[in-house]
Amino acid sequence: MSGKQNGAVQGARKNEFRRLRLEGVSRQFGGANALDKLSLTIERGEFVALLGPSGCGKSTALNCMAGLLPLTDGSIWLDEQRIDPLPPEKRGFGMVFQNYALFPHLSVSHNVGFGLKMRGVPAKEIERRVAAALDTVQLQAHASKLPGQLSGGQQQRVAIARGLSLSPR
Image (cartoon, rainbow, N blue to C red; front, side, top):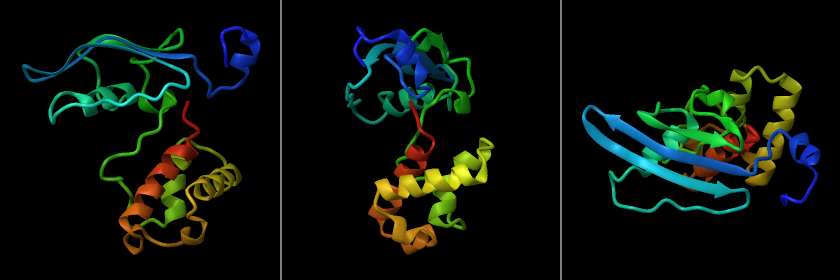
C-alpha cells in the first residue's frame, strides 16, 4: 500500500506492514561477534537477499529477526512496534529452514498445520489454511504422505507451505 492510502485501511489487515527495521543489531556467541551492528530497513514489497561467506551472520540475522536468538545489542522494529522483546510466535514471521525441519512421523498436512495447532487455532481454520497452503505449493495430492515418501523438492514445498499457513506479515 502506498503511504497516501488511508491509515485505517492499512491497519485493517493484521498481516500488513510498511517497514521492517534493524537498528544496530548485534549477536555474540561467547566473545565472538556473529553479527556486529547490522542496520537494515526493508520496505513492504521489497525483495532482499543476504549474501556472504559462511559465518558472516546471514542465518544469525534471520534467527534474530524471527526471535529464535536473542539480541546482544540493538533493536528490531516492525513499523512503529519494537518486536525484539516479543517471543517468536508474537512476531508474525514464517521461517523455512535450510534442512526443512519436518517431523518425519507426521503427515504432510499435519506438518503444515503444526504451528497453527500450537497457536491454538480452531481445527476448522487449521483445515482451511492447510488446504490453501498445500494448494499454493501444489501438494494437495500428497497431504496424507509422510515426508520420507516425498522427493527433496516436495519436502521443501511442505516447509514453505508450513510457513505460509501461519499467514506471516
